[in-house]
Image (tube, rainbow, N blue to C red; front, side, top):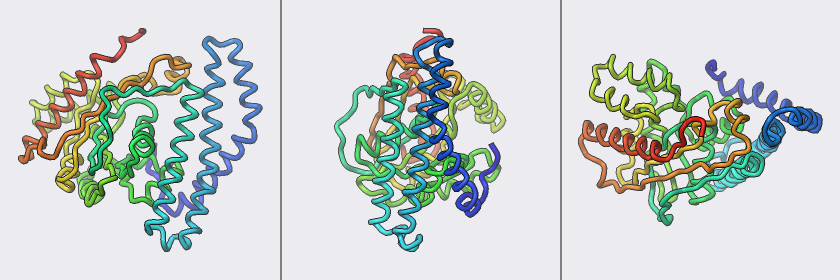
Length: 337
């Protein structure tokens, strides 16, 4: 996907155009649902096409409502002058909880999405640095919804800049100080400072979220990450990455910068399995309705568990990534099951 256009272009061109497309999609949705229902008479499965089309309609409706609501919040903030006041930021958090709940709720009802957490701990206060694996459709939305709705957290999220093509994520993310990065850039090191800034000063009800892999897991990306480690002369880490079958080699720069910026925060590692089978529309369609839950687990550590030396921290991160890989391997269903 190409670079996103400048923010002014997105606000004046992309967002209004997307709003009109969303409205049009909602208006013609009865015809779309009728056609999908007819197709499903001849296609295998239980209303697979209709389920996907219905979820698409819900998404378009949520985006249209979101753009109107966010425009109203912009006006409410004095046309942006008071955008960072506590009251306006809280209104954005309320809106985001609503938006995430509507989307995830629709996926639960239409697709059969279920989430099962293993060994979930009782919520407790304190800032956290959340480092999840990255695989499958919408895992970042699921994690954000769980943090905000399930645990009452205010997230600070590091995201790929291409997500700014999605108007709601783009607007809310930029208004609340989210960090959009392009990991593949040659000058990607400049984002490390931005990540550190985002992780600085975390409050007791806040959660910093960063995906250390830098992108969704694919076999191609796994091989590319291993090759890059070998080219850098890091044969030891390349071998450890080769031993992991379900994860990309973690990129330690951002995670370690966040830990250094918030040494008082508890690191949290997050594993999940089930979504990796849903990485494309074709895979999702063939899997509907979902019969198995998305299984997840997290490990909340204390700051004292983090080594002080940087080389030891990288080793520590790889060790935890191996732990997550083993957990996924013990629970993932074999292909075709």
